[in-house]
Image (cartoon, rainbow, N blue to C red; front, side, top):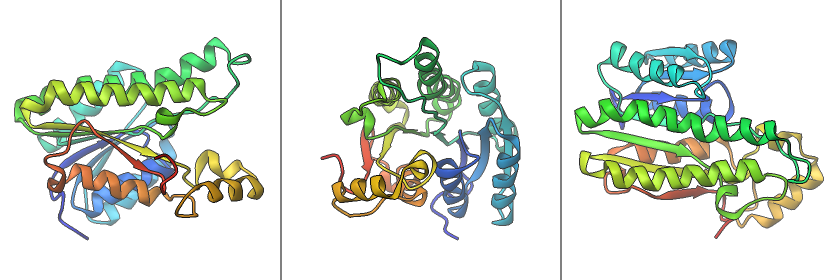
Length: 248
């Protein structure tokens, strides 16, 4: 157990599994108090229990951050239970892949709603208490796809590119209040959607990555811990790629 984030209060969306779970646990191991959000109640409760087993407090708010009321409740819960909100990690995201000639209105709108509007809702709710306390760390989980594009993911790439634009703009708006805003852009992480790929496809992906391996949720989580810590005090408006050198 470390103390990089001792008694800081962190809000993590999409915390029920994979990257979100790893981020929540990594923050807890560094001493943070956690407010967790996900749509799936059972997995969310399990992560909260894991955090409590580490000796850190955790509370949960189930629901979709596409609804501003849920985002507002998340931040309100942090302030009510812990007195402040220091760290916001916008990790909630979905993919609905299709080539653009086959992509439906619903596929486009659903991905943009969760990945981009959800982050906007949470940022808007969090910045008020952060501005009052003159301190905050906002970390948006984007993707290298938002930098480079990817066939079959027009909606996903647009949403993740939008997160980068949101990150850079909020860094300009909030810097004078000692609030940093950065993005982490994972590459191919060996969980979630990547698990469904055949071993042949996974091997082709590895061949494109200079480090010759897929990433882990913990790789992403450690980047988030760094950006949330005092070690990153003078870093804002940046996109940190965690992709083994894939996108250069």
